[in-house]
Image 1 (cartoon, rainbow, N blue to C red):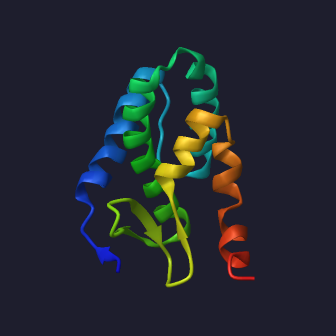
Image 2 (image 1 turned 180 degrees about the horizontal axis):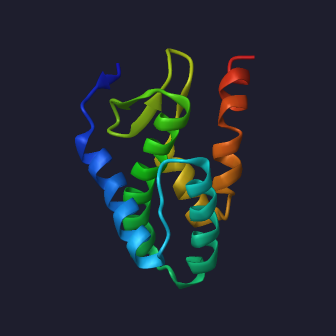
Image 3 (image 1 turned 30 degrees about the vertical axis):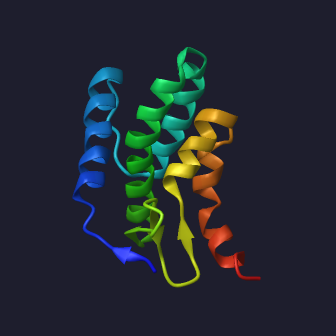
Length: 128
């Protein structure tokens, strides 16, 4: 059974990503699709320099940012699953796994921008 939990820590992590990257890269990030597309390219440019420890920290922080971006653009709410993983849940049949999305981008070079852009299509066709 899922437990709905206030997710202030995740929101704080997402805000930290915006603050740090906006200052470091002289760009104004927010929860828009444009910011997700920028992050996709940013990770691509820096992936070769990342070790497993870096990826672990980035997965945690950037996963929160991706989740908040999903919430701001598509709705949903943070839910902590019984296994401890965090999901964005839209309804009983539709959810997104922001930490898995960013993890796949960090590890397997899956496109973050494409995953974000096609999220509504995946939600609509998930039960078909």
